[in-house]
Length: 250
Image 1 (cartoon, helix red, strand yellow):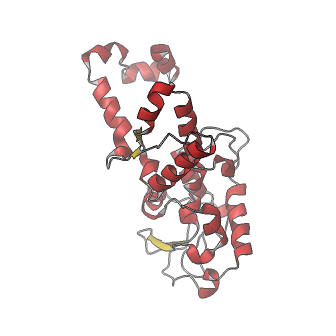
Image 2 (image 1 turned 90 degrees about the horizontal axis):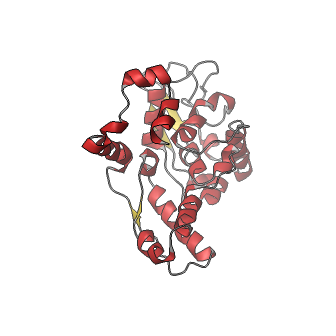
């Protein structure tokens, strides 16, 4: 979403744009992610899910404002708008490769920017959350979330592994994507089966308030009297910077 758009009302996407052959859809998919790869990898997180929208100016076929008007280069949509679009329109595909190869399976959507313009979305809706499961799409060498969860279960003592596998708690805004819980459940169970952990039956705990669960837990911890010795005031942070966090908690 990092781009300006023309300020006029336009029609829905043409039929021709809906009937692209699978080969063209694969090419768009490759273009969509190729310009997002970075030399220095970092843990894949929410900002990496939002980032592709800011780069649409470099992938001109990935989104449209109406039928003939495309996102222009040089200007960016407000981050708030980008975040709203991501939250309202994106979802996690349960069969990513199958959906990429079959444009007929794309669940198209239209997002109003509030200024008379509309962004029409197709495969972008499920391509943006996909790096959570396949960070390699952004050039990151780290494994996806299901693999990380399985690796964490492997490190747990055998006596506790089965019990903890039955309460895998999901938290964070990105877990609110439609389809995230189902995809995570499928892939985590597949990881257990593939590596011979047939006795493990992961059960995901997805509470409605999981989007802010970390902040809620943090506020509860910070309110404890015994935690006051680790409080950092704003003045302290502004004076010492983020390195103060390591000084206090390491």
